[in-house]
Length: 171
Image (cartoon, rainbow, N blue to C red; front, side, top):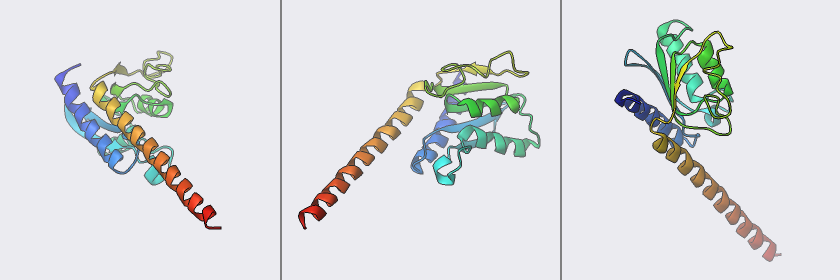
């Protein structure tokens, strides 16, 4: 892990915080080439109600437009959470050279946790993978988000029970 990897992961974390502020799962991604930011994005799945608006896919789409090519050779993708199968497929198909992620995803990660699609030599392209860059910060952002969400749901359920009790006691 280099200082530059930490620098770019902090930019990805800033993107993730934008998602959190929209009450989206806080995942951010940036694509970098020759130490220059090419594209950045964050999850928008809840906002768009579209299953494919993951941070990685949105960043890839922006980078393809910026570069005028579907080939993103020589680029590094920094993402706060290990890519899922869908995102891993897009990463391979777009020819991203390297993926650096923060927190592992034991339930859906395909860059080493469940499997490693990105370095599988059966595909015609492989990515170098580096994991655990700012892992604690990336993981804490996600953990805090889900803890808060669960607490809010629990409180909403409690409030609904109180309303129901009030309505029922008034009969």
